[in-house]
Amino acid sequence: MKTINIQSDKKDNSLKRRDFLKKAWKVLGLVLMAELALFVFDIIRPSRKEEIISGNGELKDLGHVNDFSLGSVTPDRANKLFVVRQGDGGFMVLSLSCTHLGCAVLWNGEKQQFICPCHKSVFDMMGNVLSSPAPRALDYFPVHIEAGRLRADLSQKVQRKKYSINQVTYAV
Amino acid sequence: MHDTNSTIKKKIPCFGFILHLHPRKVNPSVLRFHLTFGLGGMAALLVAVQAVTGLLLKFHYVPTPQGAYNSILNLQETLLFGKMLRSIHHWGAILLIWVVFLHLLRVVFTGAYRKPRHSNWHIGLLLFILVVFSNFTGYLLPWDQLSYWAITISTNLIGFIPFGGSWLKEVLLGGTEVGRATLTKFYNLHTGIIPFSMLILMAYHFWHVRKAGGVVVAEEFKYLDNIDTNPHLVAREFVVALVLLAVLFFLGSVFDAPLRDRANPAMSPDPAKAPWYFMGLQELLIHFHPFIVVVFFPLVLLFAALGLPYFIKKDKLYGIWFISSNGKKAAVYAMFFGILITLFFILADEFLPGPEIVAPNLPTWITSGVLPLTVSLIAVYSFLRYLKKKYLLNRAGIVQTFIVFLVAAYSILTITGIFFRGKGMSLVWPW
Ligand code: HEM
Ligand code: FES
Image (tube, rainbow over all chains, first blue to last red; front, top):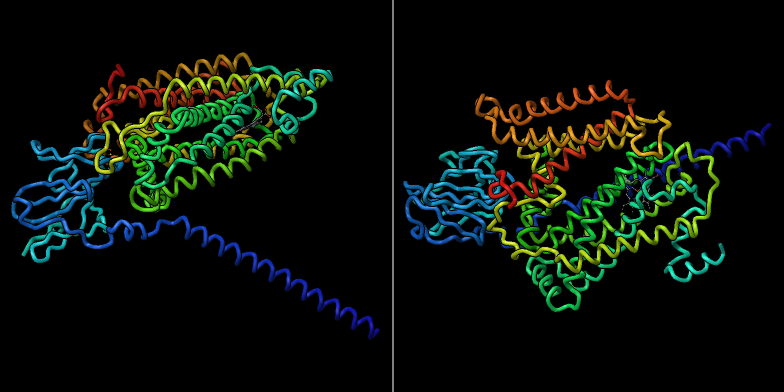
């Protein structure tokens, strides 16, 4: 009787141990999978490194405030933007990527409009949509004016539905 | 018998290996060219050609925004047969899309997607997606105006997917716009991950064909005695392969792969178009809300395709084209209907006053979303009902008719997008 009991006890124990080990393997497997998934995810996700490499991380100097006459639109193709100076002296830096599918819009000085060559979206001087398919106004970059220098933060493209006065920066 | 065997054996390279992919004996009915048109084999050969030409191109290509364009120019101008090498890779990629798509249609219209071949249908769908994705990633590599703006437009489309679309776009681009990170990513996908996955899936695909006992054999031919694969099937495949290679080399040496100006991120060409196989989608986008084109249609199609083998399983009719003579007639009808109604919709959208003029206060998700979608779905539904009654179609027949309609409609959209859209994407004559 006794011996049998001991034996079954042993069996129970080893079974428990085996169950435990099996579970441990499963948990370890799951941990491994999770780590692998995170690892792959980290590789494919967009990194902010790009902006550091391209030098877009800091404020970009676009020139002296007085370089831009009142009521003018100046393309800066190298930085893919337009510097817009309103009649009252306020500045706005607009991205030249159309908000429809990303083509580069062109400034038409005669009509005082931005026109997209791809699907004919039209924007006014402030970037408002005058004609679809573009779904929202042209994106803009935050502007900082220090000691008469016009600087824009090219790492932050701000999306907006339409123009409002607080998107404009004034030289003080 | 033995003689033919040994002569072919001497003349065909890698003969033993190719033979190994086949069963030893096949049903004589599968030798008929018009059962498969050898399309699967052609796809395999084209994948091999792309691998070889691609590996050679890799010796000279520089995967950076600064170096890419010049390395292509250099390759074309200084390398012996460099231009031809690039052109063959270009035409091979185009032929591959065509061949794989036709292969898919052949599988559908001969009913070969049904059990026991359903897993292979799924693997095939995956291969199809990989072929398209491979073309797409390769399109960016020359870094000229064509490639830069095509990828810009196509990836911006992804941004319209609600919930996570713009995130997905950033993952694909490695940033907010096409740039260095995008090129690195696309290059790695195009020359590493995609071909590697394709190779593995193809091996799996071929194994499944063998496992199912070869390609579909119609009920009426099952009684025939099997004959030796070698030489009967292998010799035929060899001829198809030679003809395909001849066509490819002809195209590659006569028509150069296009190369426009170096990519200029500040100046888009007018019109800016997506790669040709996405032009049907771009055309649809002129008429429908982006959500419908980029999310609704693709997802519905994908799930419909995945579920196809379960939706139609009882049918005994396979191994013959279009099921029956009634099925054939309905298919012809559907083709004409698809062509005409698509043309009608394109022209109506161009010349009739749109809902945004008739009712300017409605939001766009109604005027270019729900409204045109409902109209099109009702038109297609009524037409299918009509054909079903007229030709007494069963389930398989209706699905097949519907697919014929889809293919016809997409072809018209693609042709319109490629040839009849000029400056500002307005309708023009191509001459
Ligand atoms: C790289 C792409 C592909 C290659 C190299 C390939 C190759 C092949 C080959 C050599 C066969 C033997 C029969 C024939 O020649 O038609 C075959 C059969 C088959 N393929 Fe593909 N294929 C590819 C893509 C696809 C696609 C996109 C589909 C559909 C979604 C598909 C579904 C099938 C099915 C279901 C069969 C069995 C047909 C039957 O038994 O009659 N394959 N494939
Ligand atoms: S990309 Fe500007 S209108 Fe389409």
